[in-house]
Length: 279
Image 1: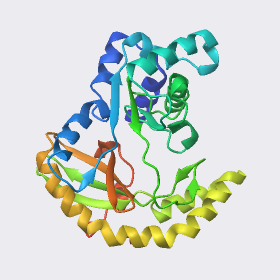
Image 2 (image 1 turned 180 degrees about the vertical axis):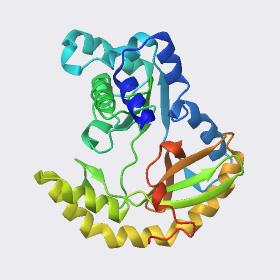
Image 3 (image 1 turned 45 degrees about the vertical axis):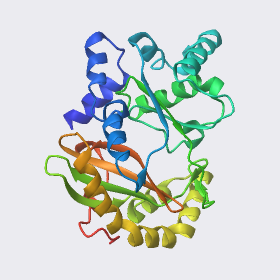
Image 4 (image 1 turned 135 degrees about the vertical axis):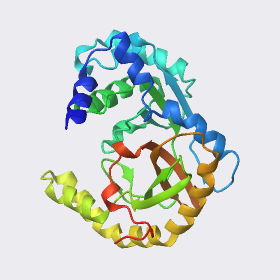
């Protein structure tokens, strides 16, 4: 309980040198684990990762995206847009998936999918503002990734997110063992969450999920054991310590590793199934 309260307080606090350094050391940040994952990915041919650009903001810019978007001027936002466009070496005609080092705003997908690279700085402001609201603002890193188009033309939820089959596998890097796996879109959690929502969009998302539930569960069960075997081989070459979650997204015949975090900070641990199958 104290940890969650502390996280929320730090998420909304102004940055000083001590807090900045603490955020830099955040093991959940893509900035810290992605290079080690990418090195291992390059040694095999099963898993893929999106092309990724990640930068650590200096304290002044990291503080800027902690300001409420409405409290910044149009002039300051335009300057920040220019800085981000150059810093990440963006291309005007590309679509990107963006996130902070630790938070993607996946449930407000129109903010995570950036179709306006010249305005990406403002996207980061909005994403980080929401991250701070939900206690996930403990990052000074920004990430722009290749947007993986959905080859299966899946229906969407959460304002435009394709409802693809995803897996969360838990691993122990100290012993190079797979602990188990759970469906990222777990039927119990997702249905309960969407049913509780009162707005029209969430009701539509609930019906969309119901229409895809059988397919998602079938694909999860079909591939999960294979994925666990491949993850078991992969983690032998990842130079990390401790227990982590690894998120995997299916796109056609390809499997992308799209996120990682400390297991202690990850959801779905109560649904881990060592045999892999949906209960």
